[in-house]
Image (cartoon, rainbow, N blue to C red; front, side, top):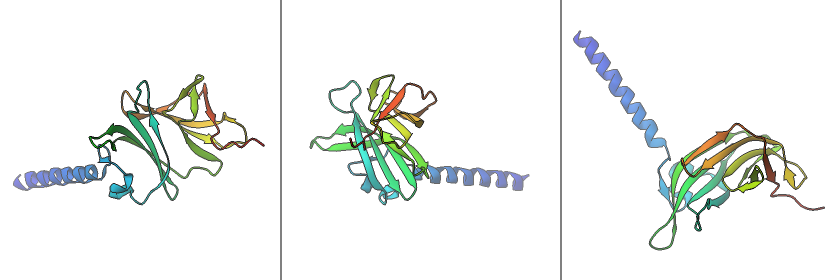
Length: 168
């Protein structure tokens, strides 16, 4: 019986240590001024970033798009201005996507939802030569109320501006 209790106690302790190890790898709740300050993402390349105003005069959130190889990392941040008037970010949530097709790209802040510009939409869309892109494959909302990135299942009513459009 003592051996059984010893084994169970050991398993519980090992399990707790594994959970703590995984938790320490998370970047959620990390604060930074430049993403390079976070070792686990310092080797990513910045693709784009945008601020989210919502209904505020000053931006309260931001969305950062990083890439390393085929991996895309979207970081949803709370944005604050410190006493030195410098931007300070706190990571609220992340979205990781890998192996995006060559015919697709991520658009952040260039999509309309039911004809209203929505700066906090993240869309995986198919490239096109037209001004508006209608082939939306997946879309997520960086929700400023819940402070989470939420996948939207309803794709109807979403239309994206082609930020790379060149009038010929």
